[in-house]
Picture 1 (cartoon, rainbow, N blue to C red):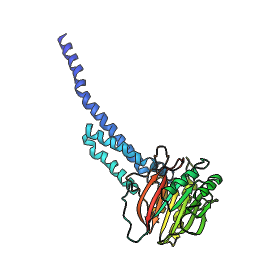
Picture 2 (tube, one colour; picture 1 turned 135 degrees about the vertical axis):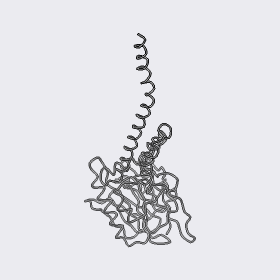
Picture 3 (cartoon, rainbow, N blue to C red; picture 1 turned 45 degrees about the vertical axis):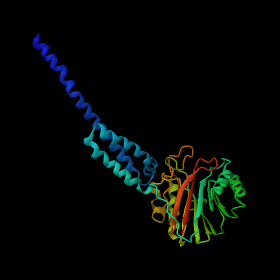
Picture 4 (cartoon, rainbow, N blue to C red; picture 1 turned 90 degrees about the vertical axis):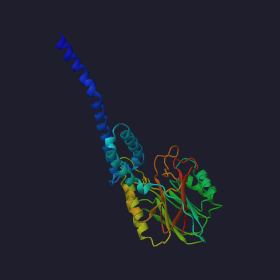
Length: 321
């Protein structure tokens, strides 16, 4: 009986002594798996096509998951800190082209130009309000996208007094306080025109302005958007203008591989308000799909504001030669 009692005691206590160690090992393994999954998700943002578009859309938010994994490693599995730092560093590398920048002061004798752009959401009835609010915010040039016939007429009426120079085609329009010349509708590889190039005669220098309303992205259907973005990059590359800005709804987040071609031709404008410049959806912005690129210009400031009742925030960029 005593031998049996002693054997029972040993069988009961040994598992209890090993249990905390097994639990710690299990947690470490789960943490390592989570870190590797997040690393894979970050790497996906570099892959061209559907995978890269999806990966780029969630890329900023993967940082929260990586932060949680890193904190957990510090608290319960310090031997995994180095392992968890790998996806964190890769995430920083992937996000670096999309991080905010700093405002700069304009050179003496130059006239800053403010360019505002917004997708006003067709059939929302808010184009006039958006146009008026962007004008009140001090825009010299107002670019609107996703215009239908009714919203185009409303915007024209709202801006006609202060912005006597304008041009529109398809779903895009531009209004300027300064004369507009050389207006050129652009199809960018599609069968219809959703982009426009004009030359704005600013007091300092002629400014080439591109306004883009890229085709929508839906699961399995993004070829039209990619074609337009590639066509835009080709147009900008061939443009002889020394000062150039491109604005509009690109339907591509800042890290999307589809923007690599235009990034090679112009500088992506970093938000200078300390944010990532998310523009959509306006109620709770989760992604920046309204982009600004410049060439031959200094970016004095760039931010986003609410205007009208659109589901997009507007971009407001102050530039100087």
